[in-house]
Image 1 (cartoon, rainbow, N blue to C red):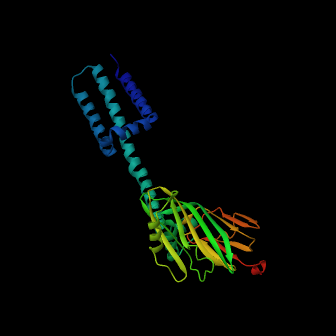
Image 2 (image 1 turned 135 degrees about the vertical axis):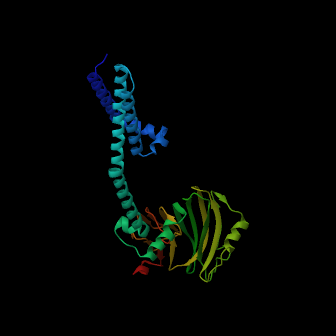
Image 3 (image 1 turned 45 degrees about the vertical axis):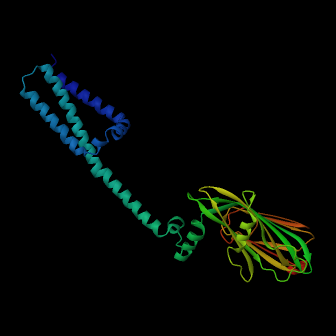
Amino acid sequence: MVSNVNVLILAVLVSSVLLMLGFFFRKKLSQYAREKLSAFTKISPLFWSAFFLLVTILIWTNGGALSVTSQTLSWLTILALVTSEISIGFLVAWILIYFVDKPAKEDAAKDFSEKQAILSQNIFQYLYGVELPDELFKHIEDKILKTPFYRRNYVIEYNFNKKIKDRFLIKVDIQCDVFNITDQTQEFSVEGGIERPHTEPGFEGQPLGLTDLWINNVAIEQEALEAAKNRIDDTAEDFRFKHVHDVPPKGCINVKITLWMTKRSRDYEIFRVLENTGSLKMKLNFAQPLPIKASPIHPNKEFSHRHVSDNSLSVEMDYPLAPHNGILLWWGDSADTFD
């Protein structure tokens, strides 16, 4: 037979071991509870504390009232001590949840709500410490943030092929990759225009405006090409064109176009992108030396690279361009043009 003192000592040891095991394996037990006992964990710890306290009381009451052997009473005593420890544990958990954890979560939620309110009012003020006027933020949002397309590998080549009297005949080749950066199919417009010519002596046999258009290296049919020229009205200053092509979600198409135009021997040209663009390269080829200058239409104000020879000029902008950024060109009959 085991004495009551030994039973009490054994009960304390068993309770201590259970508490230590619970402490060291608390993460695994917590994960198991979330995965397997989710229904029970939704019940307040205070309920479980009261439940195990009631079990403890019932064990002590029945253990003392029934006529049992001391050996049986010893194990009831151990069980009662264990359930009482569990009851205390749940009580401590309830105190921590409602008096420590819950206020901390409420403070964190309040702080998050305050920051969210600031962000909803002006994200630029929150991130950069500046408050943009509403009309400026609206412009950035519509023209840059909400644009569904992004262009890469943008290359333009001007070929000054022939000069008759005071005018050049110029061939312009443009190509780029167009990326749909949304999760939906988008209609991309291949759109642009060239300056309407005035008098063209000697150029009668050369069609002006859009003459060729390729999508993914496939030329569009002549009927579609004519439709592109007539899709939007010309202006008093320009010949306009527009061709629409679907781009799949997160997809890409390669676009190439060829334009022919005339320019005066002393003139200028402005090329601007219509979509957000990763970079821009431009090359100009001349049949004979031509005094010409190029300037970026961009906040950077300088080209990344520039190469000049007697019969060509190459410039690169190896940085992103927003809509209507581009390049300004001007040239003349002699170097005196720039004086």
